[in-house]
Length: 444
Ligand code: SAM
Ligand code: SF4
Image (cartoon, rainbow, N blue to C red):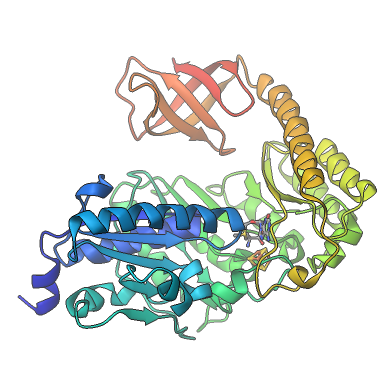
């Protein structure tokens, strides 16, 4: 047995994840790497020997949550002693590096988003020195499928690219995750084949800007990749996230329509309904461009389910500009939205802009957006009552183990009861009632 195996064997670890699906997938890799060296995942933080916190720097709020968690872990470390190891990884680690250690010397290691692979080495050398590693490599580093500990039995994330070249003026991602690098398509396809053989029914292709994917060797683009994934028969549902409106060409919409396994569902972050704000955000499209994409998608796929991201209170956002976001929401009628108050982030261009919208106005605008969207969702979800919908059952409801939970092709949450054994299967559900954020029903 090598030294890494000896150090990690039977060690209990706990991975805490902040942030997006990208981070969820990274945490599955971290857990898989540790497990492949004999360590075991634990559900109880207090009983673990190693805590890895996978961080998110996109908004200040998630950074604040990290610091409060670290405070709690410090108290625990004082009780448990030196053998309780704390690692901070991901975007906040990349952003603050050694400054984190200066403020919180009880942290044992700090790793950027491109450095998870070295956790086993770190654990073997840990007691000799504290480790900070935040280098970026230009090349794709493949993590073997065996080193991914998936949280779902039926739906899997598959990373196709990392980083971002866009530098939207509010966004820290290009500074924490580096420039775009794409995974070679044979590796993507082989991972999906393996998932299909293990019984996975849905896959979500992941990247900050998947539409700009280019295979580093064949130079084939996103549409070719989508078409190839579509040939893997056992995978019934294919989704991809995130798309960028400036790269979302009509050809991609046509490829979605023509690929029978690709769900008629799309997350297309608009950020603002105002062309002048979009210009200041350097998004590369106007309100009209965005609405044109939506019109084309609905023409090709009338049943398409659309979701988006909205930022309110971007520097200098006037009331008139904000109202354009409200009117865009009314016009498009998204199935779901993720809405945020603008949060100034270090290194970004917008952070230097002193024309900040006062906090109270940002707060009021966020409430207005969420109230409007809630009404839209109540109305649109109501239209599904009485219909029978195909649902992929992903597990039991967290609140009530007698209720099952799943999603439809439109990625809406459906809670339902069933007299038959349907866990992790596709099932037809009759929708009997609806709320703004989920639908309720039973199997037939
Ligand atoms: N790459 C994706 C895109 O272009 O939409 C998502 C990136 S980001 C991790 C997810 C969302 O966080 C963004 O779509 C944006 O709405 C939000 N976001 C990013 N920076 C923000 C900031 N400084 N303040 C508030 N929200 C922010
Ligand atoms: Fe951030 Fe813009 Fe890149 Fe998305 S496209 S990750 S919002 S810089």
